[in-house]
Image (cartoon, rainbow, N blue to C red):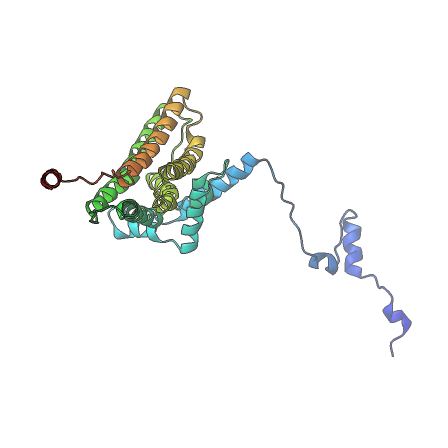
Length: 299
């Protein structure tokens, strides 16, 4: 059986020699070594956080493999996106929040063409079908009215919307590239990011065109104006950090042109696809009226 002396603390010779050689040395117990070490994170201002996010996204973008422009893999990468990401980007484009940049908060240097392609396709279908349906609802109770679907409007809508979704971003991207050479304080997005931004900005028009089937002109104009305001706000909030340090005249002109083109697209679609049909009074044939008068005189 162990005696009481066996449980007393015994000084080890090696530890005594080490302490004698270096009196300032410190020792650690096994309990201290097994304790988890915690790191303290110092959080700076908003600018430092934004810079950290941008540096992280740039690092991830640089690590992403890029294929040649002429290969199928280059375009396939822009369709490599899941449903959750698309819905999140659509939600962010329909409900813009002041101070939140759509490109930085939703795209994160990973633009896609899947969402913009189907948004434009959906808008083409809704604006054509709802325009035809609205005309029918307005005139179906008129005497002698025969419904004839206007299929030519489908091609007009397709050419207009897809041209807008590609031509306007191309012109804006080229202009910002030129301004970067003139003023080093001006920034810009890549061409694909600009196309992606414009494609998602058209999401607000889809529910507006669906509700425009209601044949009330004031209600339709309110829907178009609200959708235009939301869509334009997404664009302005996204490009403002890159153009705000440029010449004031250039900044005001650029924002005015962006908003004006968006308004022109919305008003053009409203006037062409949802125009107020003219209701003509039924024409009484002159011959019948004359014959009736003759019969009345002879009687």
